[in-house]
Amino acid sequence: MRRLVPTLPAAGPEEYLRNMGVAAEKCFPLLKPAKHFNDAVLTLACYGPSLKRTWTAVRHPLMTVSGAHDFLIGGGIHPDYHVECDPREHKARFVENSIQGVEYLIASCCHPRMWEHLKGRNVTLWHLYGFDEANDWVKARGEGAALVGGGSTAGLRALEVAAKLGYRKFAIHGMDCSYDVERHAGAHPNETERVIDVTVNGRAFKTSPQLYESAREFVEIVLKLKADIQVAMYGDGLLQELLKTAKQLRKAA
Image 1 (cartoon, rainbow, N blue to C red):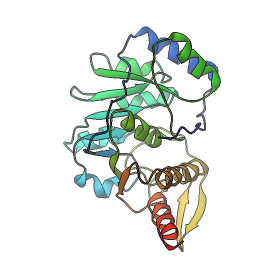
Image 2 (image 1 turned 45 degrees about the vertical axis):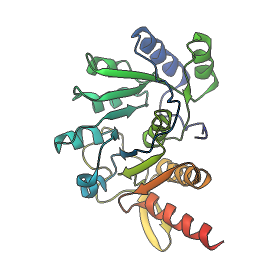
Image 3 (image 1 turned 135 degrees about the vertical axis):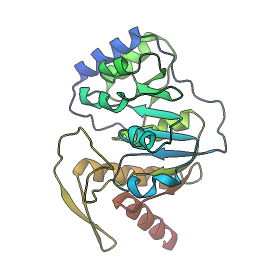
C-alpha cells in the first residue's frame, strides 16, 4: 500500500524517539512482511459508534484497534490481532486487559507503559513511517525492519499492518469517522475534539477535522488501489457514505 505521512498526535519527535529506544530494549520480534498475499478476509474492528450495531457480524481472522479490543472480548469474541501505534501514555489503557491468544502488533513509538500491560503476551514490534528522525533511527539500526506507512489514524495504520501480514481483503467495522449519539462504541480516554458539521450526499454528519481528513485518506487509498484490495464496509457513518458516493461518481464518470 502507498505510504502517507501521518498527522502526528500530541507528542513531539523527542518523545517518539525516546519511546522507540525503550521498545528496542525489549527485544520483541519484528514484523516480517509475508512473501505472498492470501485469500482470507480479515475483519478489522475499529471503535466507532456503529460497532455497537454490527459487532455480532465480525468473523475471524479478526484484528482490533483501540477500544474494540475490550468491547469484543466483553462480548465473548477474542481478536486474533490487536494494533496500537499512538505514542501518548493514555493509549496504553487499551491493552490493560490483554489476554493470551492475541498477537499484539505494537508500534515501537508507543508509550513504555504499553509494555507493562503486555508482559507475557505475544508481542510483535513494528516501526511507524513518519518523520525523518524516526525513519533514520530505524535504518541506522540495520535490522532490515520495514517501515509501515498509512494514514493518520490507528485504523488506517492497521490496514497497512494487515497488508504486511498478507491480507488484501477486508471487512471493516466501526470505522465511521463520525459521531453518533456517542463518539465511540464505549468509554474512550481521548480528550474531546472540536466538532464540525459535514454534509455528504444530502446527509449531515458530526465529525472532527482529524476524522474527516482520515476519511478522505481512506477513500483515496481504496479508489487508487481498487485492483489490489477488496473492502466491505459495515456501519453507516461519514466514511461509509463518502466511500459509497465516491464509487458512484467514479462509476458515472
